Length: 117
Image 1 (cartoon, rainbow, N blue to C red):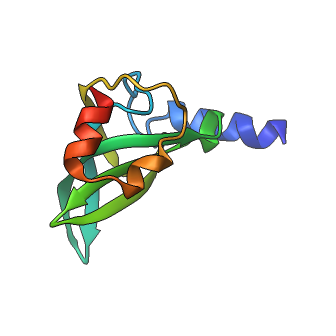
Image 2 (image 1 turned 90 degrees about the vertical axis):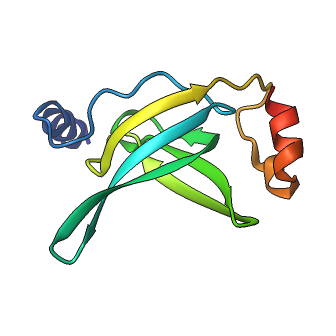
């Protein structure tokens, strides 16, 4: 097991994984530039939303981001050390008292803004 973690850490240091991530917590609004490959073309797609959870540790750590697009809630899970993440910006820090914000799923966009400020 230790050999696998050491291999993953060497791979991350070699630049095959994403660059250094800024510090962020659940409740923060983030903008993630994701590298999308469609056929032979490659482009950058932005995904902006609220971090509702972080889980795992080390190379296996992931975070879940939720946004509302055309009135429909969209959630996406990103590995922190993923090579598809081009960049991550923390746009706004949220002030919450929970580690998992799954209760935001049942709220409207306006109520979520009020809850996070």
